[in-house]
Structure formats: structure tokens, C-alpha cells
Length: 438
Image (tube, rainbow, N blue to C red):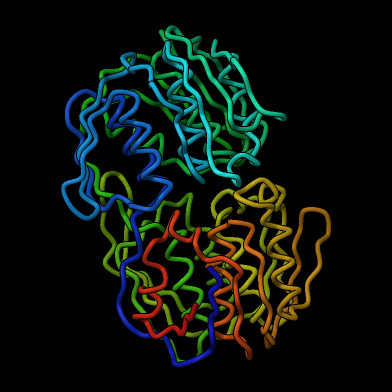
């Protein structure tokens, strides 16, 4: 379904974006692995998270919905997964599938993983390699370690010390989930620290986990195996990656002034806000409070004149999902913005680096790629182009934000996949005053 965004009135109002996707996945998985009842409020009910909920049911948990965003999980406990009768189909959910591979790897069950056409293209080997060291076995796989694949877990996994070759919260989390059923300590060493939701939530559910600095930017995370995880209450804060879209749109559309409620401000997720402030963005943080080990706050965002900056590569782990919409902001900024170290963008839901550059080109934005760096020279954006999304929700939403401030409308070729992470994107943006038309 094509969708177009047109420049119009200022964006105004107060909104709350969906619950954080990363925490929603982890809340369900830890609810599965805990004994007793886990109550979750604010769960993101996008297609990705619902696929994880269905997988938890297939592995033995009782998962029920009490109302919008309100879910209960009756878990089976570490070491007690049931072998599923059906294929676990994760749709487009890269996070859900990779984290569940870690869960399965530490249990004596055999599971078939599959997904949609986009997920089938994404590499899984970086997650599978450490799980094989822990005793899991790949029964069958598609070319290049891709889905569909059959994974046989190990009911007595080996505790290992694993240094991640690239910064990846998904790899780290998969190893820690597998290590839950290991008789001993499992350690993950990161040279560049990544988002730490798994560590925080494991502690919240009763695991003994220790985090120490490692080198200049890294961390060493050690988990004691076979904890007695107990069901907990989890309040899912608003997703900063989803908040990025109305936030950037409000910065770009003249006269805009909006408030985004309850956004998670975990330090490992605030790279975009830091970068935009360096560019001159007016983003005020108010009503800071805590929820389940995470800091949340309201963000007041007002239209701003932005200027180009140099974004260091070491910031990438804290904003890896936000680079497409940052590139859109850079297209309107005065001068040149260089985003360094974007190799990881090539292996997301699409080759996001290629998709972003193609979208910029289609709308007349001056840019170039040097190695793994994206350089955008901003100013006035002509627009008028149609952007190929490659079934990537973040590409779709990013370029719709461009159309709200460009001279001519911007069209995305397919907006259907936005439902994977932000089902209410169109009505929410429309309430703020955005002009979006199918």
C-alpha cells in the first residue's frame, strides 16, 4: 500500500508512542522462563512482538491478553520448555527470532525457525556461532545460515566466555539466555557497550548478573546459571526508536510544538537525542521517573534550525535503528553531516544504508557514501520522489517524515510493514496535524 506525506500545518499536541519493542520481546521471553505469573502493561502489540508471544505459547507458556497492552504470562521455568509441534514463524521479527534462538539453545528441544521474505534474507550466523560453542546443534539451515533453520538445543549447555566480534545486543542477549540453564557462569565481553535491557531485566526477574567495565568503551557481563526466576510485573515504557519519528518531524515542520509522553531514556538508547541536540534541536526533558529499572521522561520538541555535525562511530550502538530518520533530519540541516561507522545498517531488515541513499537520491538530497560513512549535505529538500522501502518499516516512516517538510510530497511504495513496530503511526501523526494520504 503506497502512502504519501505532504507539507502542511505545524504539528501540535501531546502523544504517547507504542511500548518499547526491545523490552516487549524480553518481557515475554523472561515471562516464559520464570515460574509463576508475569504481568506486562504497555506491551507493544505490533506484529513482531505478537510473533514472539505466539512462540512463547508454543514452548509451553500460557500467554493471555487482558486488554490493550495488558498481558499475562504463566511461565514454565528455566529448563522446562516444551517441544513445539509447529514451526515458530517470527514474521519480520529479527530480535524475537535471534533471542529465542538463545532460549532454545539452552534447552533440550528441537525447534524450526522461519519468517517472512525479509527475515529470511537476514544473517543468523553471528548469533548461532556462540550457541554452537555452548552445545547447540544446527540440524538444517538455508544457505548462509539463514532461515528457515532447525536448531537442536542442549539441555545441559556449556558456560562460556564469549567476546562479541561486533557490537550486538542481540548476540549478547542470545548467549545470556542460553546461559540461564548452564551449570556455571556465562560471560559476554563487549568491546563497545550495547543496549543493556537484557541485563536489567534478568536482574529484575531474580537472576544474579554482574556488569564490569572492559577497556575504554566496553563491558564484561557475567551471569550465574540456573537461577530461580520468578514472575514479575513489567511496565513497558514508550519506545525511543518509535518516538524518533514524531520527534524529527516536529523539528523539521515550521511552527511545530509537541510533547511525547513517557519515553525511555536508557543511556544505551539516547544517541539520537544527543546528536540532534548537537545539531541545534530544541528537545526538553521533563517529568523524569523510573519504571522497572528504566528511566523514562516526557519530551517537549519544538521546530528548530539544524546544522550539520560529525557523528562518531562509537555512538552507533546507541542509535543504530535511528540512522534512517537522522539522515532525513540531516537533509534539512545547514551544512554537512557525516555519520560514521554504519556497516551494521547493511544487515538490518533491509540493507538500510543502500535504502537510505536511494531514498535521498529520489528526493534530490546531496549525499555520498565513503566506506561505511554516510555524508549528507543538507538545506532545502525538493522531495517529489517515490521511495522503495524493501519491506522495512523504519525506511517507510523516515521518508514519510521527510515529506512533511519537503517542497513536494514524498511517497513510500509500501507502508504495510509499519505495523510490525508502530501500528498506530498514521493515526498518531494525523492527530498531530500531519498530512498522510494513501
